[in-house]
Length: 221
Image (tube, helix red, strand yellow):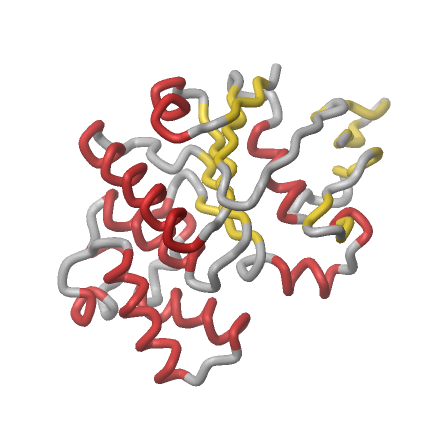
């Protein structure tokens, strides 16, 4: 896959001829320096490259035989959150501060699974419990600012896994968390992976995280 961005005076390749594959239930890590295209790769897989100025100029992204590069916007919206989900590196900016965490998980379920409001809330409580946050019946009504950094990241993982996606992309999922909480988040991701069979793409520059999580590594530069 090649991704290019149009700039004044020409075209700049942001990702140049990147290729990898990932089996169900496997974990692959993308590593490299800041600016090498790791997060852009994730956005390309999610169909979220801003266009213009960005474009996938060559290659394909195959999900169970379907080329996502050729998919319509409507199809990509159906895939995002449902078949491919992403955990972003800063949950405080990814979570909406004016809605409770339960409402945000429930919205994902209602949009992709067609659940009623009550069904979605019940499932949200189950997901909060699944990511090992105590008192899920109470926490479902909390706002993001009422939770610690580690809990907010757990909520992001709960949202990402709510619809049981085939692929979970985790972009620096433990940034700004202390070492103890980092280990807890990685343990959580591995446990949920075993339960759901999801494949994980871990984006990081931390080789300790790679050693903890990954079976295979792609080095970008």
